[in-house]
Image (cartoon, rainbow, N blue to C red; front, side, top):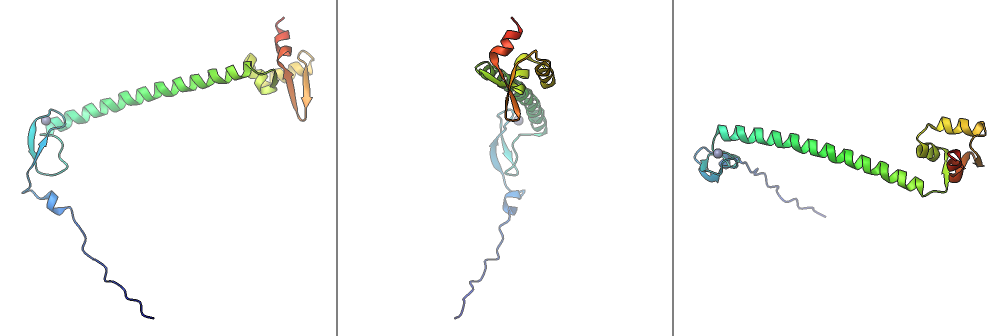
Length: 140
Ligand SMILES: [Zn+2]
């Protein structure tokens, strides 16, 4: 059985005609809004001064945007902390990690308190579970 192979099209398209200096494209300057004729399709501004001003404005905007993003990210981080604290306050039984977060001390402090008998914890497999009221009793 014969396979017929179609001849491949070898013509490559260039952007060359668009780069031609004979081309005049009516455009609106993206900075000042003036009408001008562009020599290339990529020209956005009527002149160097507008291009520079637009560049500076863009850089300034990028900075402002970055600052806003950072503020937003910080806000979101704050929110997630608040949420996790809220979810702890709804629990009746806490892991040592949870208990330490709730009081704001290290896990080691909690474990030391358990060893000393200051805090009652129930062994739960390998872990210890602290009843929430036990922690509240500490403050009574
Ligand atoms: Zn301009």
